[in-house]
Image (cartoon, rainbow, N blue to C red; front, side, top):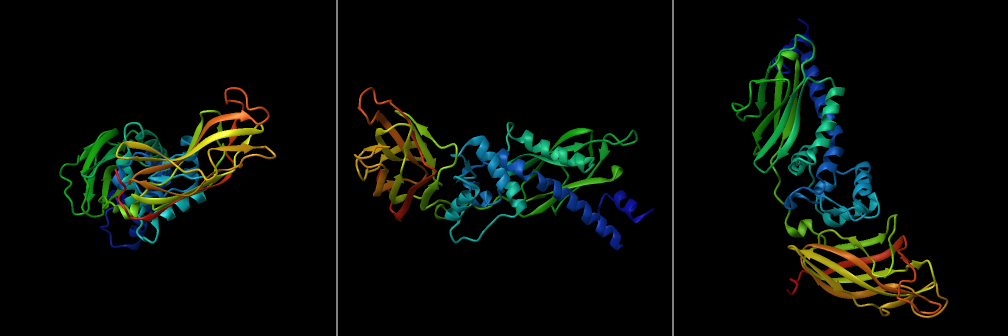
Length: 385
């Protein structure tokens, strides 16, 4: 029997003393890992807004590549949040948002930890596209046996084990052998039929590899399991500063009664100094009444905090003379609870500058591509309720 055939007969178990057998096994494991990695983008799209709050932070967001970011932004819009981090105007802005949360901390996730955490966000509505990606990759790799993540919790991880017999002599069901580090495999099936079989294992206290070997068909699959990490403390996962300088297309166009908002990362509780400066456009010479607010959300309670306006709540646009031309609030101080926060612009009315008649719905206001919206924490003071 050749070295290769003997290796397959052993199902990839390292019982041979020859170097060629070790190389074959390493190549097999690499191929399995490769197609799991190829579907990380599908995993992000399936779970970016479904992870339990305590595990959804910038450490997961660091694993999002630009292509996946662009798909999410296209599908969910410019105010989407990916693993707790606002998408921002561009991928580089998204990276800046991560840096503002990460600050000087150095911890990060391995690819295996990222997947184990992200699997907790899989549900009946999101698991399908991710598993479809894995199935397609397994077919391309000509695999007969493949483990597909199905669902995960803090205590258990479930998989669908797919077996696809090849040829008329392939056994059905096929005998399989399991290993899971030093853990027990007594509860796992010794034979699996064609199609899918649900497999449930306990989440391990340390990193281990769950492997299944189908000796009779010369195929195997494996996946790395990890414990869930300790959640970051609030001061390490929440932001003390939010700054928005660019508005992506399509930029908001606002009529009377309209509003637009832009999301910040989850903010630490405290007192913040806020600066907003926006030079809007309009389709007419206009006089506009407006408001600037910070909208906070914490513990299911939403609160709108009005900002002081530097030059009053009325401006002129496309008018040679008259009032200021900028939506502006410079240096106001607000108190925020721990939680989400939005910058918000609201339009009360728009009159044509020629005559100031009608119902205040004479035109529209456009938000420019470059703005100044910034809030920065002054001190760690618990806000008044």
